[in-house]
Length: 142
Image 1: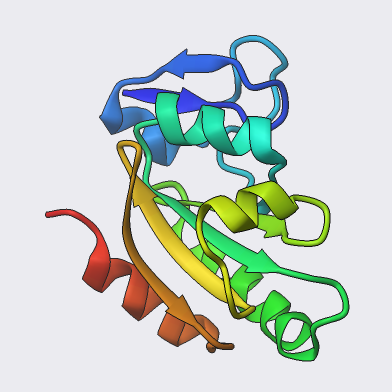
Image 2: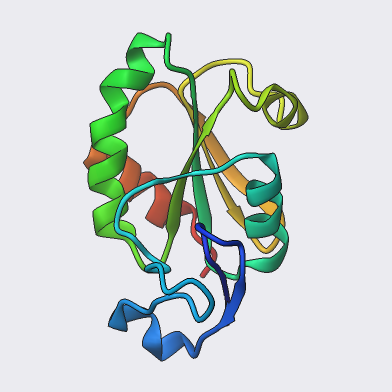
């Protein structure tokens, strides 16, 4: 299984049974699954999407958005529960406007689940941690 390091963007090969062992990146030694959402710019997002084999749950948000700020701690709790089987990431739509436009993000917060280079599902609006976990698990590939 290929896992892209959120810190240095190195692609790490990892047997699926080692996911639970809290593996570190072979290049920079950062945890591959930090248990909290990671911030992605467009380049890091594309690398995760095209090279990583772990499902990617992205929170498209902005600092000025009240519901986004309310959902942030819920998204962080969900990250702790879903890791290492899902990588949770945040994309600031103000800083990454082209990326938000590419995915036609019209409302924030919006979460979108990606796997193997394609979008599986999306949901707009603030959600609780339990709802995020439930929604993600319901939309993961079998």
